[in-house]
Image (cartoon, rainbow, N blue to C red; front, side, top):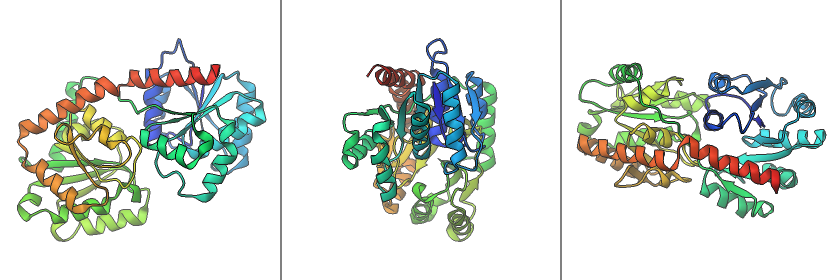
Length: 371
């Protein structure tokens, strides 16, 4: 089995690839990974599963040497199946497999912005038949793909993201307590965001919502945004706005970390203000770590952020509704927040475990090989 992905950076697809490889039984599947960018956030996680990592070289997905190297790898190794993750790797995998005379290819779509680029739509129509099946991680994505690309109807399979839960050790709990102490004073409510700083994640909408809070509420909440600044201009604007006025000392940008569990366990609640999503890892991981969530109603977020049960769900780009949900979280009794987190953890472990992810993915692999 060869997985093709752009890099092992700190993205949602990369996190799910590492989770999947860790859950697959090596007696059933021998896995390798091919990348063409050296961003190694998840490389230790991938290599710890026994999977080898092949660097395709070149200068990115548009470099013809990447396709040539991938085709050469496919010719030299008897892979039964290629699973590509994300758009450009899906293009490269199909072209390289055609050049190499096989193997079968599965592609993945992991966001609901399909159709934003006319050129992308034309390319996907041209290459759709060069893959056996498509895996998506949300029902919303499946509907979007089949509506916009009828050539894929009947060949899209939904496999929701998975989460691997382990009981936190004393060291993990100590690091979480340290994170909390670093970013919030005793008695303050710590609200966390885990995500890249880019337009999709809507950091400015979150700032608008925080500024709508009454003074008394704002004085009790600290918000930390943990993630990599993809959009540097947006990042600068967020830092400037958060550093002045009512939000000064109430909002903090924190660099991405491999120790993301300390963020979840150190927070009182997790917020996801995104404009669009598929099946959000941040919500899955927050609930898996027993933290209630405040999320926008995008993609399949409503499967995880269940109002009155595991958290709050608000319309996207609606700062007033988001402020209202934050206010409700602030005014909730501590015991109620704990109960929300516990219900979320039970939901994740029952329906979205790493073992469930592996079982559903293996079923798609078997279908692709026998179909």
